Image 1: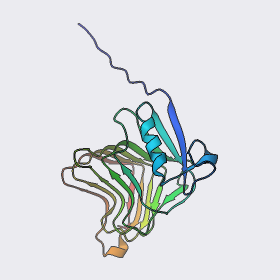
Image 2: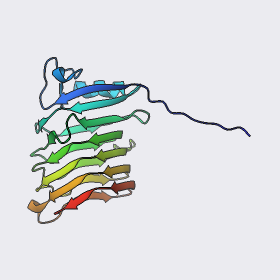
Image 3: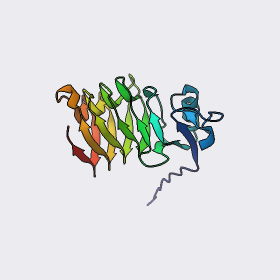
Image 4: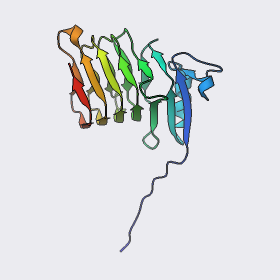
Length: 205
């Protein structure tokens, strides 16, 4: 009998740094040279690196409120992109617009230790495919969705075929009270599959 064993080796992890505003050279190569979190060139560099290695982006402490973070066609099926707090709950993402983070046609992305808050009018995090490019393999771990009082739809939106999403050890508090009670902690509709919510708390929605 022939036994075949497949081994996956991730190799080294490439690390970048991001901040509410750029520091130093702004190329993201170190904490002292952190990239501005809305810098399109920086995210293009991150995406290029994912072709050969896992990537960690460390978000430094601060208020990320200059605009929506759009992650479109980001990620790789073979190498994970981790968007993580340098210090747990130190990065506070917010916006006065519709959505704090918009994930479109992206895959294999993990959010860790980030707080989403403030008066966004639609979503905290919105996830959806980009035509034939699916949105899949997302993880939210040790994140807080707190005081999203004007979010009309929800803290996390999963729509139109989004699949394989893990929400683990997250906290959802005080959501949607400015919208006459229409919001959801996690909004899922239109053929979503493989969604798990584990070890999380849900209060006042």
